[in-house]
Image 1 (tube, one colour):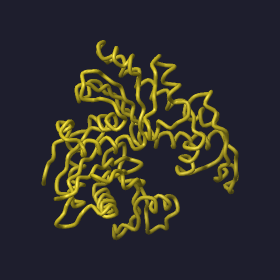
Image 2 (cartoon, helix red, strand yellow):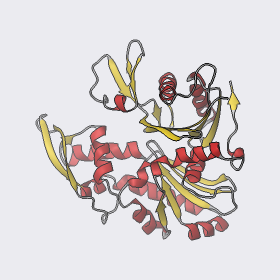
Image 3 (cartoon, one colour):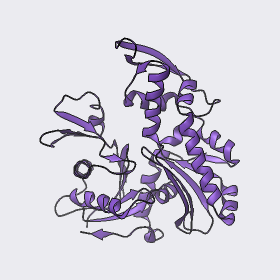
Image 4 (cartoon, helix red, strand yellow):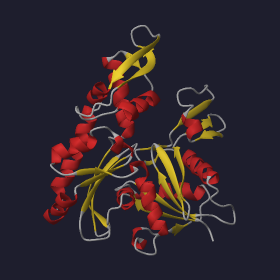
Length: 335
């Protein structure tokens, strides 16, 4: 019998869950390839270290954008490499996989995800909507009639969903998430501090001192880059307050998406959300002050899921390990 595997194929990171073992891989969704031959040089952490440092013959980049596949061939190669790393079977033992997808993707985008998995060597594929998987992984009871709201902030998209009876009653998706936050920090440092930094440095700033609320001061840190004024290497100390200013517009858009979803929610489900509050998952949930900011603007209790980065993958894992309770959430397709 083939293995059952869950894959959180994210814009920033890929997590893999193997039935009976749990999460066995957590790696950046990055591939380094030779430009002429398309040969894969490195994937995951090794490839991420190459971003911005590769020679002209090699390029390192992410083959997914906004939660969907942007480069089909490279995505298949990346998946194949990750599956080999977790020993997901061979020619005679191909795995069955469940892969998450953003809510509201087109049929073409769904088929691209499935075909990439088949090209990577899997036997059959099922897709599950990301907000549903995140809610299951965060411990919410999605199958009941009581409504719950979840905010999943990944690398490419922020998805706000109200879930009831095993489905999504209300949804709002915006392309303001981890990558956009990094870009805002890069832009701020260039315009306000006169320092050119890369996306990797911006991501480190976001993770270590990132904040979206004035009261969530996380200190300061030194960063290195290139001076806009003279083009030479330079060092500066950046404060959490500055990162808060850099991310203010993006944070406002996330809050507005939550408000719009609440406005579209039927009264009966609104009452449930008032009682249960809002759950945040994804890497963006770790931003300093985000729960307080959303709570202040909605008047609702906001909770961050335990291990929020793993919520989607753990949700897929619960579907795999379940004895039928989530069977309606997925439908396998063979090529």
